[in-house]
Image (tube, rainbow, N blue to C red; front, side):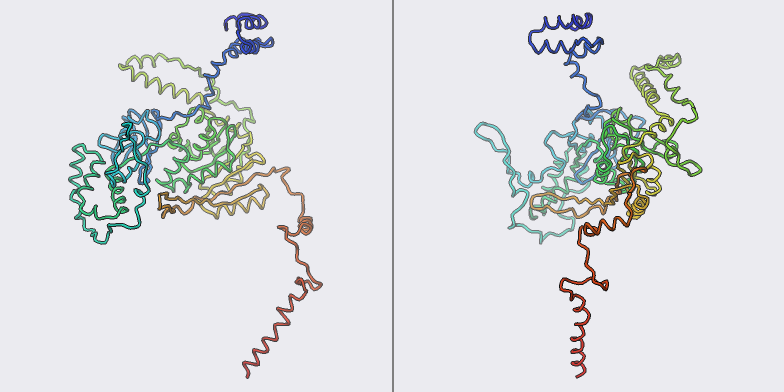
Length: 586
């Protein structure tokens, strides 16, 4: 049927489609697919096969898979709060170790293909994935109450009893107490050498914890809370587990903040979320970023925009130094391609100290790098010496790896932009400006405001308050922005347990300060009201905040309702003082 529609005229195809259709809906679909005004065969073929269109969704809207792919970066979150980055590769010969935990290197080849959220246990054989339903920290109630096993019902099915509150929250009346416990390290019969012997024998972590509980002479005399703490402490030491989490902007920022917050300028994940919200970043916009936070802000923007739009990330030096951190975000090719690196010399100033205007190619200079890139053809044909080099390779695997590297190299050449193209992008006003750098906020923001479109937001992050205060005053003095806000971020973590819910005892002091605002138009964004007219309007409205102005007397003093407000403080206050003087004199 499709061949008939493509080979015939639009009117004939319309008649044939109506004859062959069996229902009214099919005939309407055929009429739409072959309208008289459409002469494009490819368009008509595409419209008649709607099922094929549904099978080809927008690649930029495709969600990342729920499992780990080869080459992805993941975060391993342990029960004690540690967060370690891991690189999931099947072969890491000649490269850095994929993951290192407790001064020991583990392979991550078995993690490829596992779903995110899988719980892993550290064993002698490596990271062992546990079945679904296991937690990072095993429930200590299973050891405290071993008699509560599965219950057999009449239908010969095994179900677990509902968790009782008494297993987690012990009663107030405790039979045991800790008054007779003495911390002399003699209550445990198993020593460190015995534990190593058990591990070499192939005993699992849970079996080691059970053996240590059985060989503890004071375990039965402890309270329920002490028993639970003892079990958790031994599980953290001899039965370490971790959960495999996807690398997102929030998880990466949290992991790096725990590792070394000074490299991130004490940027927390809640502060990063506020920066993305205040900057009004969405798909299709153009953002100008200046950061020294290891590339976390740039990666978060690329992940948020999903490949639509441009991220002009300013760097200093010969090349960007954020490639290692950007790789941890597992960005797709469109998301990674949306990041455009711009040198700081193109944005701020030259050697003479004057700001470079956002104009390019005024003298008709040819872009040689762009011309060389346009000369490349894809797919690139192999040259004679490349074919000879491939012929010397014995294994098919080596040839495949070499060709994959060659394809990746040419793909980078075809997609790499030139400095002239970066200047052309700067000619278009940006939709938002984000600054998270160690430089002076005032000296950094003022040269970037000409690149920002009017009525668009800007966000400046700094770990100290004083530089942002100076920037705030300078923006107010020059009337460059409105809706200026200088805010402090504060976050507290809570422990949520039955009967023991309270804030955490340790928390970060602050996550930095944010200065946000909206740029005014330099031409029309001016206040035409003078100060005298403003005073008259405020007097009519009733003050600055709607309060009624105070009524003044003829002498210039403000009186009360009965007109005797000053007498109580002045003239009438002399009589009591005179009586006190007579009493003291007598």
